[in-house]
Length: 473
Ligand code: C2O
Ligand code: CU
Ligand code: CU
Image: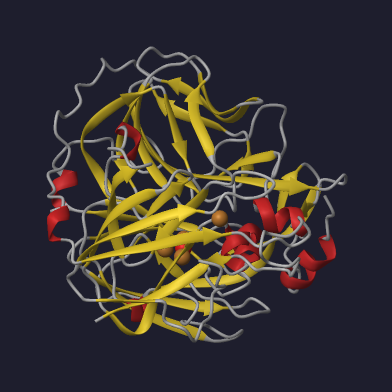
């Protein structure tokens, strides 16, 4: 793998003048950092300043990074359904950026996609009407061609939507205590333990995959939790890695939420896959007081992500609500359109695709790369549609693609022509496409002029052209 540290530095090292963080590296694991929580209220704009900084991932080794209002990552924003909130994004990066509210159902004009650019030194004001069920969302840059680098550098934060229905359930809700935001990311470091962003054909084909796992920006941290029920809000903020989440002691947990909010009822599981861009909410019972390790289990073995240290008085196992949320699925019979989309891989450096005469082919949909000036799909506001999404099998490998749509929630109707399994349930905005999937999509937000995006959430695929856009009128 050719690592080009200089490219990364050129992009993000501009104002890396902040002094090295004075974190003391004791022998023990670092505590899980909890991003500050900002309650965004109507009438009080909140400013996010995208800027570069420095982060000490390894003792004594600082790397240039970026964050919102800080050196790495951003604050957790909390909004209430029914509110209209104002966010101001200030760009202090040396390059153009945008901020996309991934998971918010809002009009395309304020969605923060590649059309909502903010030049260096400029600000962008987004007034967001929040009207959707409680859910774990996130925000991140979306400038076409630079999303991978900017997210990788550290620009990402969580965005929590809450509502009355959720608050009435009595789920663990003490932020940072028994309700933990967990941003999962993997990174590449060079021999000197500096962060690098690899480029080249391998990165373009597979996306950037790192061997170092970070949770909230720290390697294998330790979370002190109460010896009781704890809610984990997991975000796969990685550029390309699909996680297989499980505990080292095989303990079971309850899966309670997806991208689109709470499931109808808790689902007991022992492992859960999480693709880039996706979120999952879990309830884990630590009332036995035993330490536990959250792992990414892969075919090659298990990588520890986060160590839990339950402490304090043991709370008796907590009865879970039998029902979490009641929501109606649209009737597939009401679908007015069937669209077929195929994710197609380019062949840079990997040999030619049949029929392509050895010409380099970019990533795209149905062989066409993203074009800012081309509208790929036109949808009627309020429509229910079925989108059949599949991936062209590659010559060299079978790549699964996390397919993401802006401005909608969808449900998986069929996978590989059959009824989907239990892991496909719930409302989503991102789904892993390996086998073809049929998605039932409800278009409820307008995008008449500025379009919404759909794309692969492997960020190097997206930047490489695996993206399209649709209007909703
Ligand atoms: Cu999280 Cu269009 O992206
Ligand atoms: Cu999105
Ligand atoms: Cu992809």
